[in-house]
Length: 159
Length: 156
Image (cartoon, rainbow over all chains, first blue to last red):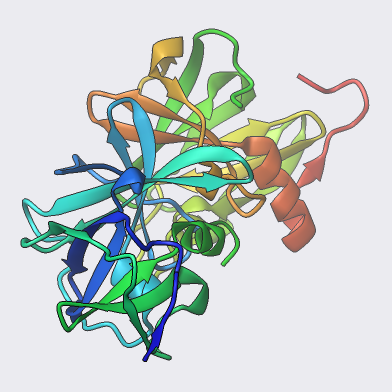
């Protein structure tokens, strides 16, 4: 393990897990989080990549809804299309200098964590989309995968 | 950006259980298929030309042959240079979309691959506005036999 500044040292993160990847703890910075909430009906979008669930609406903003497990990992577990009452993490992303919003379903148990200024860095799983991940760090001996939302947005726009 | 600067009228059409919007200004004709007509041989007519119809249901939501029910309507679409015909499951009464109900596509879903130019928010949900020009252009490249080039002077 190496100690490194992965761009997230000292940051406050939202830690969460997603359906389909129950063993993987993921995180984004709090600055990227817009809200964790329920979404109404999701509209399918023809010609979208398979990991795009569709379009949702959040506070007068059109949100691209994705299946994050499918996007990140080809070996994600099979699961129901959409669980009733599911909560979605809505995050802001920038695409070609335009602000946009994406959302994905999360399982219960999300919480905030502080990243120490010195944090041991681990290996990124080879099963994960490389441009979707900044780093894996160990916080309290628990591996935490830090997502690269810019890379994820780029992959959605140009899969 | 949407082309529309104000409210506009659109035709809601049912495609495989989802409703889409076609701008009324681009709808040249609507024809209900008779019980005897097979979707595969359906066609539209525009300016004395017969146009083969593209099945929007299999184009938008590919499904195994045989799983698609019989189409009910043919919509003849007329855009600046082309005309094409689209098979759909159903047609609803035309509606007006006010400016406050119109949204641009998210930048993540607005590339060339998406033949949609915006979204209309309705009480029943979000409707994607079909970009008929982009659809016709894509079809012209992939299936030129499905597109009729309009003769000079016949543009709407």
